[in-house]
Structures are given as C-alpha cells and as structure tokens.
Picture 1 (spheres, rainbow, N blue to C red):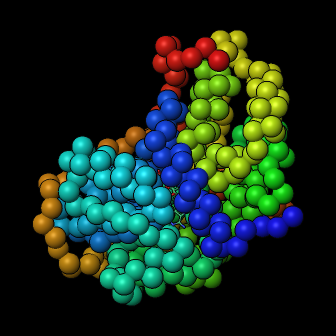
Picture 2 (cartoon, helix red, strand yellow):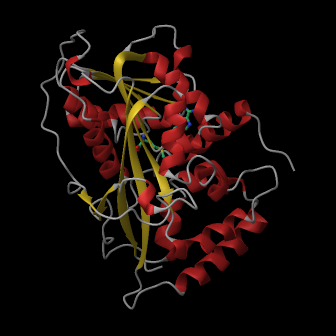
Length: 353
Ligand SMILES: C[S@@+](CC[C@H](N)C(=O)[O-])C[C@H]1O[C@@H](n2cnc3c(N)ncnc32)[C@H](O)[C@@H]1O
C-alpha cells in the first residue's frame, strides 16, 4: 500500500473536481451557497478590500465576497480544476458581478503566481478546500505571506459528519484500492478533528485573534439514490470514490443503499446533519478594519450582501468541537448556527429512489 505524493494528490484532486464540475452544487441539496455566504459574513470583508478566494470552485464564495468588497474592491478566484473555473466565470457574469477574475492556480502554493507579491491581498478566503490539500500547514504559511500586515484569513471546513452516516461512508472507503486515501481519512485527519487544533495550525503560521463559528447544516435527500447523485458531484466522488473499480463499486453501493434504507423516515426521506466551521484569523488583531488596501478598481456596482443563514447564536459547543479530552470549561463556547436553508426537500418530481 502507498499513498500518493503531493504532486500526484494534487493531480488526482484536480481531475476529480473536473469530473464532478458539471453536477457540483446542482443536485437539490446545495449547501455551498449557504456556506459561501457564511464564510464571507464571518470574514467581514470591508468595502474596497482586495480578496483572494483559493479553491473557488463555482464561485460560491467569490460572488458574495465580490459584493461585499464592492466596486472599489476586487476578488480573484483560483482553482485547480478548469471545469470549475468556467462555471464560476459564467455564474459571476449571470450574477452581474464584474469585480472578479478567475484563473487556474494551486491553493497550496498561490505564491507561485508571478504577479503576486507579499501583501497583495487584504483578505484570503478558503471555502471548503483546505481539507483537500496534501499539506495544509504549508498552505496557510503561503497565504500568510500574501496578506497585508493587517490582513485576514477566513476558512470554512467540515468538522463533523452525522454519526449515523459514518458506516455508509466506511462502506465506500473500504472498497477503495489500497493506494487511494478514503474520504473519511481525507477529512478527519489532524488538525481537522477539532477547532482547537485548526486554530493552533493558524497560530503556528503567525495568525492571531481566533474566531470560529460552527454551522450545522441539515440536508434532506429523497432517498439513497438522490444522495448518491449528490455524492458523485462533490468531494466524496472527486477525491476518493471515483477510484473504486466497477466490480467493487456496485456491491458497495448496494450495501450502502441497504444501510441507508434503515435510516429513512416514514416519508422515505433521508436527513444528514453536517457540522461546518468557519475560522477567521487576523495577521494582526487590531486596526484591521482601518487598513484597507488603497488599490481601487472600477467595477460593476456592488450588490447588497444577502444573508442566507440566520445569525449565529451562542450555544454550547457540540461534540466534535473540542479537542478529545479537553473540558468544555477549558475554552469558551463556540458560536453555532443551525441552518437548513442550504438544503431543501427535493422536488417531488425527482426520481423515486
Ligand atoms: C468542495 S470544493 C469548494 C469550492 C468553493 N470554494 C465552494 O465553497 O463552493 C473544493 C474546490 O477546491 C478545489 N481545489 C482542491 N485542491 C485545490 C488546490 N490545491 N488548488 C486549487 N484548488 C483546489 C477543487 O477543484 C474544488 O473546486
């Protein structure tokens, strides 16, 4: 058994998301728009900010960020998968957002871009991408160098799976060839198992003033097949399960569907509650809001920021939010919001899986 090196892992992720691009965020359980808006809200992008959105995908973060930055600001979206970038450009055009540009680039090493120098950006956003990077600590160190002295980093990431769904994910992961990292192992490796550990990684890269908000997103699928269609257009397929050979994929799917049948509600629907986290850090904690990059750029008129999720309320940190073994008294409670707006009951005309 061998694991792919960073170069190979990058190529596999790029190919995987290119494969998933057409269906990505279009299967009736979209939550990336909600998460994108949450991240932009948490990043508190001031008007006029110069923003980099790493791993921009189809623009779920880029577009609300561009609206927040306004006509004097600008957002650059980079992604490894050209198919994602093409969709992002199209979405931005249809949304009437002009203060954006997109280009191919590696989120793990955006400093390789020849046009960017230290201090090129006021804000760096990374929406649900950091867990797909082979060397996340190295990535945040690069991001740090691209920020202005009082710049800010805001990332969203998947903190916890619905416990009822762990056996379903394991069913597919165990069908993978030995040289491919499973989806659970991709997401649930340190430091992504606790907000404390994630924040510690950012501290190690000289970020300060931690702030993590948890968002509980509940998705509803009309049945196992609906979930499977969604999974094939998202991370599980892109980074892992597309590598399952056909002879193993069919029995794994049959087994998973049988497992999922046990989870169905009386109306046949399946629900899945995921915990996402938005973590923001400033390079320097103070006066960030007054240090807006003076570079101005004429652009389309800004639009108001549309809040999809309700504002977070202060509640007890859910399981998984603490480092194993740490006491809830050892740290302050994190803010949590429960949102279902990023997911919705599927159209009644959807397939009767
Ligand atoms: C789950 S999607 C999130 C996309 C978008 N940020 C959103 O919130 O909808 C992850 C994206 O990260 C991109 N990605 C993964 N690894 C990358 C890397 N090393 N450099 C740039 N993009 C990467 C993928 O191509 C994919 O578009």
